[in-house]
Image (cartoon, rainbow, N blue to C red):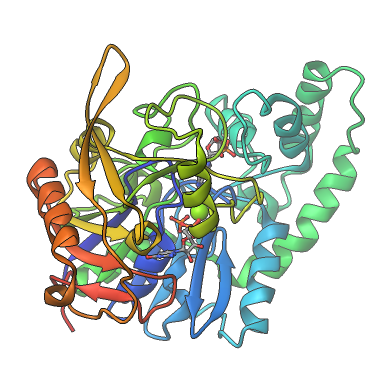
Length: 403
Ligand code: GDP
Ligand code: IMO
Ligand code: MG
């Protein structure tokens, strides 16, 4: 059974959650290996919307168990809230259906306060992600295991001292208050906390179908994205092994990309549209962040940026989402290169409504031409075409996971 990576090829929000949910019907595990509650994955099932941040998106399928690997940072209170929301939507959540690595670093109140102050220039999600990874790397983090063992108070005292120096004049709660709150909420999560590396390893030995669920996107990768306007983790294929704790041979690497480009937060975006076309994409595509509600910046597809993302991830399959959003546009543009920093576009003929289309051969000729161009330019096949947020608006051209 294959190990399948599902990863964002742009600046996040490509529709990874929807694609993971689609594939999870045939998967045994859905594993997050990086990021935290900065992610926001919206799933729509029978018209009902579910937003996930750190709980793996495969969990909606009874066959699929969600694992949260050591590469993730966890805000325990936000995680408990997510579990409660899933239960309210009648999704069973138990330790049989969800595990979290005891090596995950905890996002603390101090880190969230700090992100609120220092994250503005980048336009972070304010979830404490940057400071949590920074503290992990400077060996001053708190892991779930520390909280379980009750050794977290001195670690939090040192963190408080650090942030008090960094943000002179900012009110910080006492380390005792933060430690007690953390202990109480981690107690609730205790049944889920375990050895995710071992569980993944065992599943591989047992020939299980495993999805490695990327968060964010290639252009937000801390090493390979539009630094410094990036997140603080490895979002690409290379992060799967270290973020889970077992060598992962990714047999299929699925790049999820929108038929256009969006970005939330600051930083370069060469194909960004500042005119009414950009506004039209935002309005029709409901391009507002699932985590922060911020309007997403919108623009055309950018082939040089995608080539970079595809090389990073060794992409074998494409899942193209939100093509329906472009229906009715006279012209669809794709940047084929950048000359002196300015995109050079190739224009494609528009197409009409894609409603009701459920098969590849029923697609308008203009769509077929557009997809064939992308396949040739990016040297990967379109395996999934998504034409709407709901599960049933998913066209499968090539199966990624067998039955
Ligand atoms: P993720 O972070 O990559 O999982 O993506 P988000 O969930 O943040 O953003 C994608 C948004 O587009 C969500 O609201 C989805 O419900 C929606 N969506 C996904 N695929 C499609 C599609 O093919 N067409 C349309 N119109 N919406 C889609
Ligand atoms: P999903 O998984 C889109 C962006 C933020 C900001 C930068 C750094 O839903 O695709 P951070 O809070 O991580 O320190 O913010 O990264 N960002 C995302 N943008 N989708 C995401 O996740 C994102 N996660 C982080 O907007 O520009
Ligand atoms: Mg998102």
